[in-house]
Amino acid sequence: MIALYRLLTLLGGPLIDLLLFWRLRAGKEAPLRISERKGLTGAIRPEGALVWVHAASIGEALSGLPLMRKMHDLRPDLNFLITTGTVSSANILARQLPAYVMHQFVPFDRARWVRCFLAHWRPDMAIWIESEVWPNMILETAARGVPMALVNGRMSARSYRRWRLWKTGIKYMLNKFDVVLARDAQSLELIRNLGASAAICVGDLKQAADPLGADEAELARLQNAIGARPVWLAASTHAGEEAIVQKAHENLRLQFPGLLTILAPRHAERGLNIATDLSINGRRVIRRSKGELPSSGVDFYLADTMGEMGLIYRLTTIVFMGGSLVPHGGQNPLEPARLGCAILHGPHIDNFSTIYAELDTAGAARQIANGDMLADAVAGLLRDRQTAASRGRAAKAYTLRGYDRVLEHIIAALEPLLPVKK
Image (cartoon, rainbow, N blue to C red; front, top):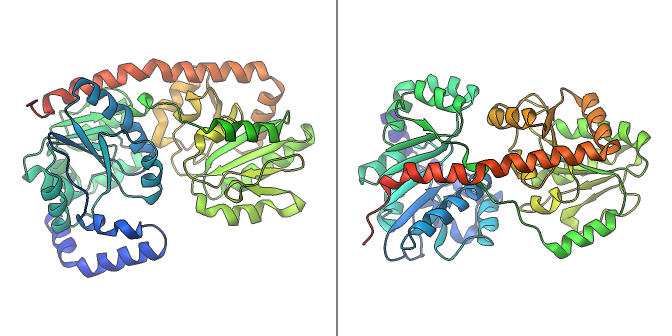
């Protein structure tokens, strides 16, 4: 199967070019940096040792920043290259990367392009974050003798069932890694079952991320516009959940006149369609992307921008995390937890099951099963601000417990792979 995959990606060059062209037209690629997707770049490799960190998208990339910072503190001679595959991640990272970290778009998984990338950057070590398993990238990197680590390895039951159909191939690739670190006990068991018998669990790297930042002046402007109105947030929602949130709002506004519901969809490009749907029954909807303010009389504030969740989470202490009332697998609850938010979530949380279970046990989060329960849970927290604050404190305390411990364990596991100091 691996040989077939490599052959198809070799012969499929014209089709991959067409895919790149379509993505460019759709705004999914950066026009001035499209060559990076073919392993070509005008950027200059820094002198000295270079650690390559690959992350699929912004969540994984942001979780990698504290790791790179900690590694640099221990070894100031190290430079870092971080690769991602989305334009939004590149835009957000551009504002946050320290001087010793460079960003590039990851090349498409075609052997020739991967070889070009590796020949230019010559990494001394490679770290994959979470579940980015691309055969050509792994095999070509291993062929160059580059030490490799899979950090925060994630494996849901659904992913396991899919990978199990290709168990020989995934076992071959997983064993190319010198170190495999699973993020939780469930992922560890499933990754070992797929053939990475030496995998260990040291904790979730995302627990070591910093709280999301926010523009203080813009935060004050939004808080002033909202005033003393009751407010709650539905974050990272997926298709089908906005209708549930809308119904919950209709139930809640009968009890809480002047209620403001903030809705932050997981994919900001859905903003226009969501706004249209929310506007039925004469409800007033404004969009963050239009620069509008949630003043009196606004029912829904649609946060349809990228890279501003640190700002949005600070507008309320009551947060429903989306992707959990539809069969998606849930979204990362640690971002609002770090900011002291009381968290609500649905039952579909396979991607973060351990974290949600621990947050529930700590009294920081609560599971609800449907829209009616969502409305009841939000109403309870709006009425009882003391309970909302207590859950928020428990959420923040949970994230602080894991920060240093997880980083120290990951660094200890990676240390044997670090390039020799010259």
